Image (tube, rainbow, N blue to C red; front, side):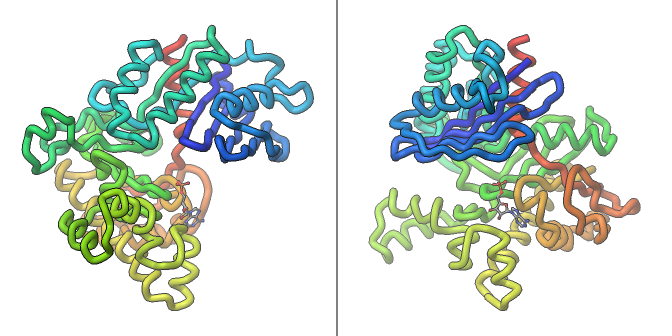
Length: 396
Ligand code: AMP
């Protein structure tokens, strides 16, 4: 079955067409600058990337251009739209309503809309993608896969904040967690790859990318995660602060004469590795600066690795043990220095890293020594494939 996977942002849209039988990506790309001018990137498997400047006043034109590219007689991956048998949509926030992926109908759309408040930048964009695909491919089943769903198994002690309980009861202020599709994909793959017992395995997944989150997974169920009501909470990220003393908000607002949106902009876009180093949000630039002697860049990396290690230690305590620690996403998959530094804090868990394995790059790999009491591995994430698999499971 051919599944079109759509990840719709406010001014961009990523897509992949996947053959679910072979799990081969037939074509992929993105639309950028929707509503501004418009640029389509399209790549059929085995061919070079094509970039086309094309007007995209709305997501409708953008998705139409994607469908045209996919069925283009010269470079298209399919002959006609009839070959797209299902569409899987990434939806950021499913609130408490969605604990797993669902086939989209009017009721589901309404429920996603009700979560708009919780993810005002993401959910409305995701809904636009859904509506446009339903309009352009009316007979094709559409599935919603939620970033928050995997974390819905967390117990109240992990998801409640120390706030007046009415904020939870009236406004649903609680920890939701994000990157759930990645945490689910990677934790279940870890059980298989490392031969752990599916029923009681204790796995910590460190999804470290531009946005980062860590989760604790027991027997395939998430018991805790670092991101909260929004993706701002947790470890230091590319431009997001992660955890801070909430009183800093008032203190800095007064000093810098900022209102709440101004402060939120700083915490989301000007903090994290970028803000701490003044160099870049990209780990590669930061490491180059640190190697060149930049103290702020060095400190930013130290703060990140120390913070990750503290969460890993906390989750080992929360689960009363840990069988495996998995690194994934841009930094987790590619940066052996970060992995090594994080694990240097975890000797008390009996963790030993095999430096030669850790220096390698590539596919699934164990980077702990055979004697290490906890297995440490690098497993690339693949959210699109997870969305494709969920879609097929629901529409078949
Ligand atoms: P993601 O959000 O998963 O795409 O991850 C993006 C981040 O991964 C970038 O901002 C980089 O900081 C990081 N990254 C990608 N490649 C490397 C690399 N080779 N070494 C270190 N960090 C990397």
